[in-house]
Length: 307
Image (cartoon, rainbow, N blue to C red):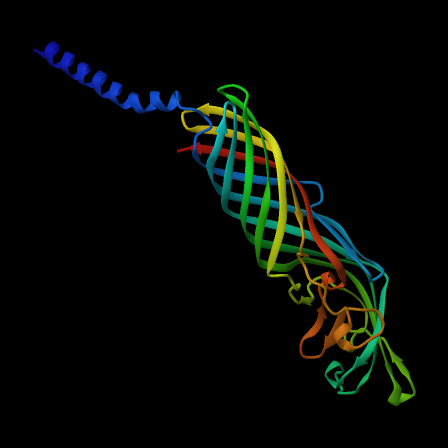
């Protein structure tokens, strides 16, 4: 009796397992390059991601990076033998950073009564050495591109793609600030008296670390050209792995030029300013950039799920 029940249980288990394996077996024999698919991918930047220039002597871009993560939907609209074309569109989020440096900045401006502990006006002179700023950026993207797939065998394929990325900026903030500045005041009303005592009006030599900063100006919209190539490997069932090299080129500046200068300038143009109420404030060095384009070589890795 017990043996009969055990046989029934085993038979039921075998039949259930066989039924469950039917869809899986079908997936195993499905073509890896299907008509519809979804891809989750990451683009890891290789080398510097931005190309920038500045007309202000002493300001330069010393390093940059950009990484992108996204999900794309693909529709194969043409296929002939082992070749096929697919239209792709999706959503992505990019995280970037740009490190800027400034040395040898000297400037002076007419400081108001709010920049003196006794309420006097004066000419404020400042020099900056080895100022560094790291600007972190974030942006959403909508990639639209066409890819050509060449199926070399059932398991291996090579591909190439090209298209556009429509970018929408979300943030641009200064996270790291360092450097030194030296400041003194010249008071014309007291016979051009020079005062550089450190206890007064933030004069003397001090570090810029911890000073208040404003957010860099940024373009809210960007347009990128994207292209890439690589290999695809069918893993099992509906899953394939994609790996390749891509390149993104921006047509619109990521960070915008602002008001900044050296020499005898206005307070609005000064890279570093001071008031008694707010203390020292540092402007973003991105204000000095005349161009700031994405130029990003990246390693692309994606997991494709065929529908």
